[in-house]
Amino acid sequence: MLLRTILARLTLAAALATTAALAVPTSAALAVPTSAAATPTSAVPPTGTASPATTTRAAATQVASATPRVLASANPVIVVAGLSGPAIAYEPLAGRLRADGYRVYIYQLPGLGFGDIGASATAFRGYVGQVLAATGAAKVDLVAHSEGGLVSRYYLRNLGGTGSVGRYVSLGTPHYGTYVANIVAFLGLGSCAGIVACQQMTIGSSFLAALNSGDDTPGSVRYTTVRTVQDELVRPTWNAALADGATNVLIQAYCPLRVVGHLGLVLDGTTYSVIRNALTDAPVRPNCFAA
Image 1 (cartoon, rainbow, N blue to C red):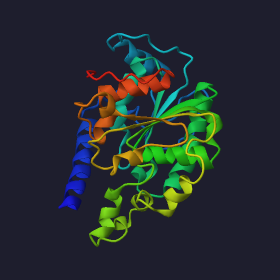
Image 2 (image 1 turned 90 degrees about the horizontal axis):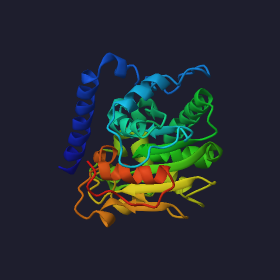
Image 3 (image 1 turned 90 degrees about the vertical axis):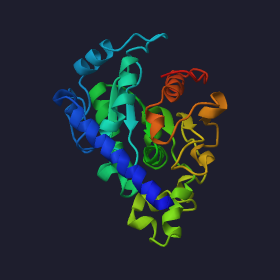
């Protein structure tokens, strides 16, 4: 029954993403990454990202925020998608960031993240280089959901990414694994039904043992994790936190009545207020009433 529930949630998420994609105007659809390996010229943003003009128009249409917008010189932000997450599903989060003045790029995991996390991280390293070349920035900031947080951490720890990243924010990332991955094997369906990334996100996997050996927070990157007690896919939820000086934020520790699920972390206003704090190096002050 639990497996059916998990598969039903993933199917529903994919269906909603597909419906959203069909409802997006053509101009917006062109802004969705179609390939993580696209190689733009230095004058053109990476394939699948909004052009500066599009970003400016999008920001101009948003209602003015009650707090000051960020400076135009802020690091570009890459939103890193999670397992089975199409880029279009992250447009609401990207839109909030654009409204605050950020240059925003969305990275959809190769093969929707079902393959080896290390291989996804290698492709991501190339994408970061494209963004830096296109923007002329020295560093990027990362806002990563679910598996995207592990892809980003692998890049930071093993692929020399710390020199190119200023801030790292993970949303519901199973840094120390999840029992939801273990349950597939428990039900006798094999090792995560053959899904490599699922195997790697299983508690006690060799992948996580290697990733979490030593320092959780290498380099001078500012690390923030965000988690919620209602996360259906990361169990136990404290496995979404990091050690070694990271700022770990449990939404309900500040807002006990806030209900946020795993997928909801990319849509929730309170969660976005924490992301905003992290990207501006401000103290954590979640807005419990944010829409």
